[in-house]
Image (cartoon, rainbow, N blue to C red; front, top):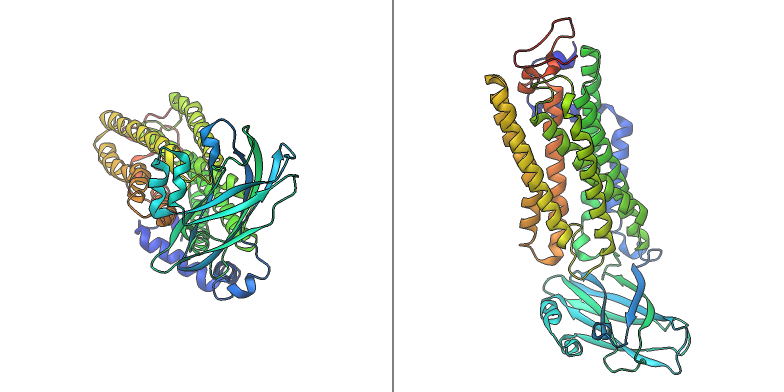
Length: 462
């Protein structure tokens, strides 16, 4: 019997049936998921062996120091969250411009605890901030452009994890009164040898589990789509659009998990994979929100073809470009002192405003379509508005709730929240389009292809 033409079961039963179908029979898929989980959880029980070939977290880059500008006397470098225990760090510096100075100068590497960081940043006299430092290390630099010796230290915490901030300063004015450009390298490692900052603890396993569940969901989605195509003779454009969004998100998740897996072993990861995964993840959300708005405007409900709604295409393109630009700007400040997750700071607030703006558009579109459609369409749109509202408001809600947590927990809360948001949304839309529910009954998915075949309240544009 054609599975798509069966009675409308609940999403839970369908999804559980698909898991039961995949797990006992698909040996390759089972082994793939098992191997993925083993790779994700490997370093914890074998950390001592992994440390032999894994480097610490590695950060490097340029920094301006000294000169007439007072902000160049004290410059933030990086941060790292240490778990309970004694972690280590290493720093070294190199003159970049000028290539040499008349004599060696002594600069200071300062280390600050998260509990005092707000006070440190609010101190108006920059060089007075040093009194909050938990460690101050003198580093001799120059006269040539050779790298300095590594400055190695340890940091301990016994009650809870802490984020530590690293700063370089020239408050003793040992460098000449013009701007010097330095390069720095920073390595950090947890007590157990892990390269992950504490806010990333458990994220590799969480992403591997999410990717595994996504594989199961894609397997179910493909089977249902093939069943739809077999019974209807074609795949409806809304299903193609949903599929493109899910595939984009799936590729993003694969890239992000690969980046985390590489980071586990070299402390650096694959930056290209990380950036591409964030861009694709944003594009997937743009595709899915655009699909919701398109349906709310009446596509498949009041008209069977896109018609005048083709104006949505350039608008969605512009929204996608804005999101990509926000990702790019966010990566520029990737290791900023205030940034504890990908959507931290101004970028996060802009995304929140954009999402609320799209939500307002969605509500207006639902209301307009409900007035034009019949009773059944209005009844469906009422349910559609509730489910869509949950999705549009999910990111603002997660973003605001995340602010209530300690900095070292914010990344985990934000990432897990978005994983659940996307999983729930993908399940809902998949069941909406691929089962004989209310949407099927009132939309053009069930309209006859025979001449004159039409539904009440639906305008079939030729």
